[in-house]
Length: 118
Image (cartoon, rainbow, N blue to C red; front, side, top):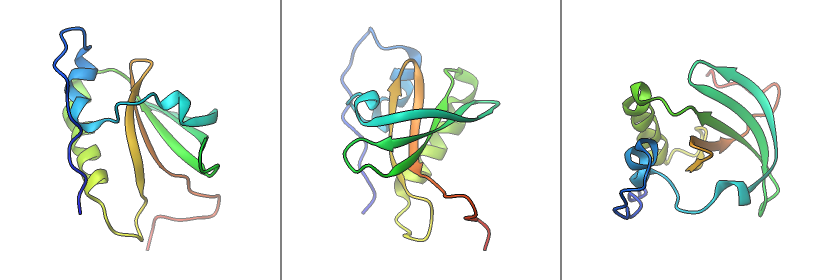
C-alpha cells in the first residue's frame, strides 16, 4: 500500500522549501536518525553522503538537495515515485526530511560492486 502524505501544519514561518515539500517529508529531525554522515559525491543539485541509521545501524545513502526553487517540481516527482515503490528488487527509500535548509532523501546504500543494471 503506498504511503500517505504526511499531515501539514499551516505556518507562515515555513521557508519555500519547507512549504513545497511539507506533505512529502517526515516531521522529525534527520540529524537524530542518522550518524557517521560522510561526504561521498557532489552533483549539480546537491550532495550525496553515506551514513548509518542510528537505530538499525545499517548503511544508508543520503541525497542532500540544495534549496533551489527551479528544481522543486522535479524533485517532488522523484520523491513521489520513490514513496510509491513497493518492488522489493528496486532501491528502497527510507524517507525524506528537511534539515539545514536542504531536502534529505535517504535510500538503501549500495555496496561497492553492486549494479543497478539488469
